[in-house]
Image: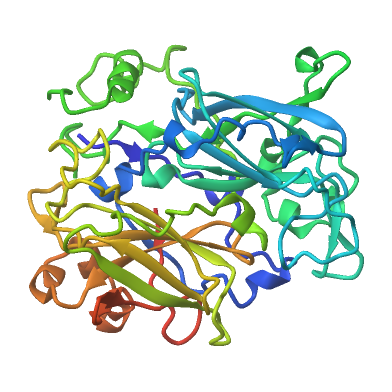
Amino acid sequence: MLPRYLRETEGVRTPVAFPGYRSTALRAPLRTPVDLPHRLTEITGPVLGEDRLLPTDADLTLRMGGEAQGQRIIVHGRVLDSDGRAVPNALVEVWQANAAGRYRHVVDNWPAPLDPHFDGLGRVVTDSLGRYEFTTIKPGAYPWGNHHNAWRPAHIHFSLFGQAFTQRLVTQMYFPGDPLFDQDPIYNAIPPAARHRAVSRFDLTRTQPDWALAFEWDIVLRGADQTPFETDDDGDVA
Amino acid sequence: MTSEHLSAQVRAADETNDRRPGTPRRGSGFLDEPVALGTTPSATVGPYLAIGLTWPDGPYAADAGTPGAIWLRGRVVDGNGDVVPDAVVETWQADPDGRFAHPDDPRGAVTVPGFRGFARSDTLDGGQYAVHTLKPGPVPDGAGGLQAPHVDVSVFARGLLDRVVTRIYFADEAGANAADPVLASLPDDAARATLIAQPTGDGYVLDIHLQGDDETVFFAV
């Protein structure tokens, strides 16, 4: 029997479009998506692991022959599925702005300084218990053109594959208590009941004395429910 | 049922967390029921996705030089008809025998050297994606039949708060397409046509329309 990956209800899932986020207006599809039952193509997915990594990928603070500017932080957590199972050996890709809120990217041209020793890219693979950890600097907030005086709260982009096409997730991790949350449409597009899931937790126990602060963020991918479609005789898949 | 074909991870999970019908633990209602954790909400990749999602070999689901390889190409287009030059298109598919490069494929792993089934292409080149791959074979539909050759596609972009999912089918598979359960679930031929790639000199082409009169059919997975 093939697993079937649970789908969250709309009340806790980010919609593809959100009126306050202007770029969605011409890009988010307008028609209702068609339900796609999970068959072999959906319950398999690319197996990506250590072969995608360089030895330096887990530490974003040491790049191009020097140390990045900013508040050094450790970001760690577990990748789980919604049944509480660890997701081991799974590729986690992260990217972020530097301490001044500037991305090393050709279309980011607001007048904050680039850092010659920060490129903003990290990659790690979860261990056998689903744990991941990387060292970076706390990204800065930055302005953008969505509305007057719009600022993105500090965030780190995460990309995860899990073990199946259905589990693919690209998201953003925020920092606790950010005063910019209220005016940010990307944060507020998340239904209120689920917003806390996008916010990391300050983790004093994992700080490194005289070296780095720490934040913990667990990531939950969709679980593989083994329960088939219900039938009247409690039997075969409908 | 035998679990021989499943990965070690899935087998281990089955031993401790089995809720399939006919197994003793199903629906017990006691505290050993699995924990249901809330899933992490998605967010847009934003405009700077190229920093995190670029691989030198990204567009190659099949290594360069693989015999029989093709290029899948197309533009990503927005509701104004303008191309979307800051998207990333990811593809996942079976090999020409219909097998997946994944341990949970019950028929055994893919056997084609240099084929990984997954590709990732940005659209920096005029809003166009390009994926170097092998044309997939038919894939079992789970009900005794076959699905037509197809590629599962995820599109990520600034302005999309979650990925959107579609499929690519092939125009020269008319017979298989006519029997495909997913194509059959669509309302009409116009909807089906948005998923069917046309042959070119070195592969196939299919534009992905995020909006518009010919909006691509997207799937809820």
